[in-house]
Length: 282
Ligand SMILES: Nc1ncnc2c1ncn2[C@@H]1O[C@H](COP(=O)(O)OP(=O)(O)O)[C@@H](O)[C@H]1O
Ligand SMILES: [Mg+2]
Image 1 (cartoon, protein in one colour):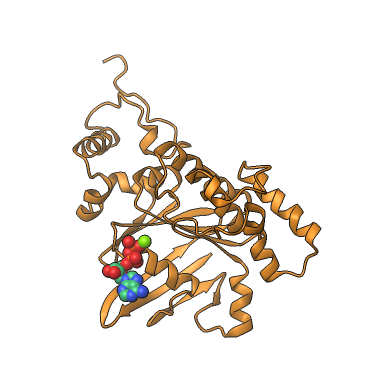
Image 2: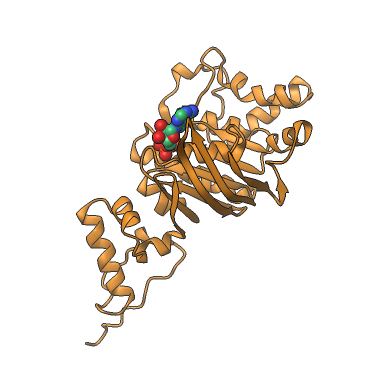
């Protein structure tokens, strides 16, 4: 679990993050959403310690990360995996060397053990056997998967992904989203994903924090998004008229104002059984 408490961050007197708090639980995908420039990346960097917040603190499994020094901080950092925006693979290293990099940095394991681990995570992201390929030879989706393999190679407790779907087509985005979700559940990781992709929100969002101009404008589950009356959130999520209509329809159905005639599992938790059709016999 990660607890973010009253984080503030300014650059040159310009407030970029204003008093943001959040609780991000293990075994779930915690999404930071918001339009471009709303502060998602800065907030994520404050949480992992790449930026020092001006105010507030971040707790990892109850331990105050912000107050930690040197060695203690390094211990937590070893438990953090990061999937950077744009993958950030080393172009001059092949896939195997890219993924092995954190192992060489943080462990003294012999080459054979490191290689076994590399092959393990490559299999996990469904890319066995691409060891000797260079990033330039990979498609966008493959690069993301290699970057994800590298992010999880040290078996992190916390996984951070900044815009994992940027530059990918919707179908490949879905593959990456599902992989992130599966891995999160499998290893009970606390995963934090920055995104402005509406599909991701509905597909993997367990907890959603909506940022607007550096502030936490709204938080809740994807189910609560459907019913939220927050105007800024609605304008962001349901940007098109079509989606706004779909949301209105869903709300009317849920409140019993019109009979449920369409199964919109797409918009809601897949585990939720469809609402019973009360119009039967009418
Ligand atoms: N290193 C930096 N120095 C100064 N301003 C920055 C820096 N990084 C981000 N900002 C500013 O902070 C705001 C939020 O940026 P960012 O977190 O990258 O937004 P998002 O990830 O939501 O698109 C923007 O106005 C951006 O210009
Ligand atoms: Mg960003």
